[in-house]
Length: 281
Image 1: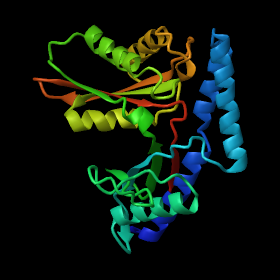
Image 2: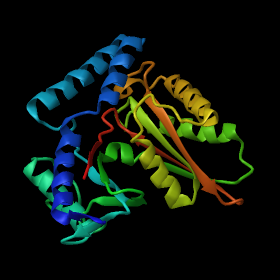
Image 3: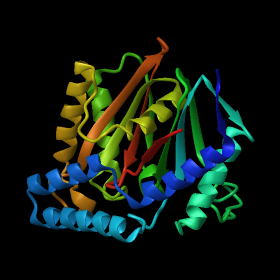
Image 4: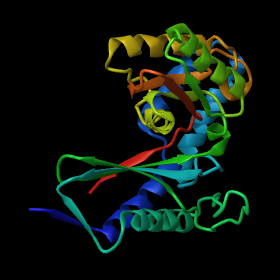
């Protein structure tokens, strides 16, 4: 038997997740900021991390956005193959939910209809939709608002297959170094390795959803993540770029098979409020 899910159910869940993601910081990032505050060597850095903690606590208490840039809505949908959507298309349902969430939630409307004409859509649509078909009869939706202070710091490199691991790691560290204070550190570093150019970019974005401090299950990449985090935190950029020992909260690498002639690498940074909220139908 196919489980029926209406487009209205999808819209309602997306609406709720847009508001939740923008007002309530995930617990893993709260924990990471608190731990960083304890470990930060710079008094200024400690004070800033304390301010960040006070900010997300106040936002949740008052139902206000954690950051004034409530981002462009990036929506990940894992659609169970035993589910049937009724009442409209998935894209329409997601955009309807984003429009309702941003307008009714009084979130900043930051999206323009056309990249060159630059006319605001007044409802923060269109959203960016990533769909995966998965086994089962459930639909899991994750809304990850992406501010462009961090998004603009994205770096891509199409390496030759002869590249060394050290050169790949140097590129990742340099991407964070060049970003400096722009992505509002301490940052979450998402890295996509392999696939094609667009696959690596999606992998890097998905990497930002991994709970802070949860390392790659593969020991090879786990060691690489930990080594990169240590190197990045030695850059001295620190919280909000004011100096210190906490430039990044975590590093997450998502690898994928690729062509023998290349090695795509994308670095996508999340700010100290790398927001996301997840729900299931």
